[in-house]
Amino acid sequence: MSRKQQVPRRAPVLGADADDTGCPILHVDMDAFFASVELLDRPELVGKPVIVGVSGGRGVVLSATYEARRFGVHSAMPMTRARRLCPHAVVIPPSRGRYGEVSRGVMEIFHEFTPEVEPIASDEAFLDVAGAGRRVGRPARIGELIRARVRERFGITCSVGVAGTKFVAKLASQQCKPDGLLVVPVAEVVAFLHPLPVAALWGVGEKTETVLRRLGIRTVGDLARVPEATLRRELGSAAGTALAALAWGRDDRKVVPHAPDKSIGAEETFAADVDDPEVIRRELLRLSERVAARLRAGGRAGRTVSVKLRRSDFTTISRSRTLREATDVAKEIYAAACDLYHAAGLERVRLRLVGVRVENLRPAESVSRQLGLGEREVGWAEAERAMDRAVRRFGEGAIIPATLVRRDFDDPGTVPETSEL
Image (cartoon, rainbow, N blue to C red):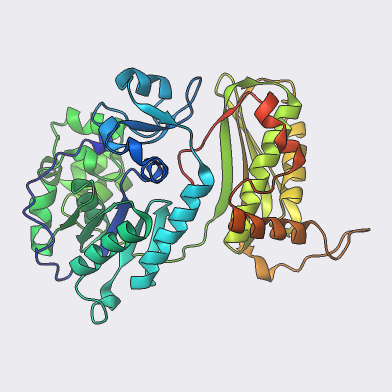
């Protein structure tokens, strides 16, 4: 498991029957989400170590079953290392469309209980169920109903943390994985937090943990006993103040439903460095298609298009352009991305990663589209919306640009992103 996942388990003394008064926040986290979805079509692999990802080269682990995690495999790990740790694991290539479909269905279940849902990834979300008590029941009961409904509807499991704050609820869901529910009563927050390793706190990365260990701080309780002034001096004002509050369970952040994205993007790492402009432009097209589809799905459009270009030596160049008007059309995003790629002067430089992002977002309905000279009233925008309808009906890949059909035969391959949303 990763360092953040190495949180020691407590005895289940704070379970579903604990006092959940003042605990309206739920953190629901799907268990090994991508791997669980893959096993729906492969029941013969249930109970075996399974890794989802691209083998070879720069492939990374997208997900792993708990049987594989016992060998130290975790998401974002290089596939070569994962295979060394668990050589007998079954490796399954990712199938993106299915994950998005199940994720949307799971989020719909959350909304059946409360409109106060804040997705933070395709496989997890915070819920505020304070307003659902009279209609459904206490928070712990809502958590159990969500777990049962997800299992019944999709055949996969999730873990639920119930607490008075987002921070504690998320830690609780980690503690009861897989397929569990844990309530942390308001009166037990400090007792729950203080035995945990300091790395469990948000904002404690490897560098911060090194500084804290130098100070003799290894648990959250150790941190809580350090004067805030000392933490501010050693870690900086903002980080010191934030960690001092978290060590005592103080977190005043609210669940923010429907928070609009500030930008929408996608990127890919090539399995081998690429210096062929045609291959890179095809990848820019594929990424533009993906970004545009996500914009349309969210009812958004954006004016600023940017590209990320990472050389083989890991130096990264970003270029952006602001369009005359906002767009959610892949053809327009792709045209801007290609221009930016050309202007960067890297058309014969070996690249390991490319990305496309659209920023400066606004509601799509607020955009008044001006027709260009010779442009038909029914054009690319309408065609791409027709493609969206086909994808919703027949699945991802039902319709793709002809240019992209070639990539299965002559592209060097890409490493998929580790998150769908």
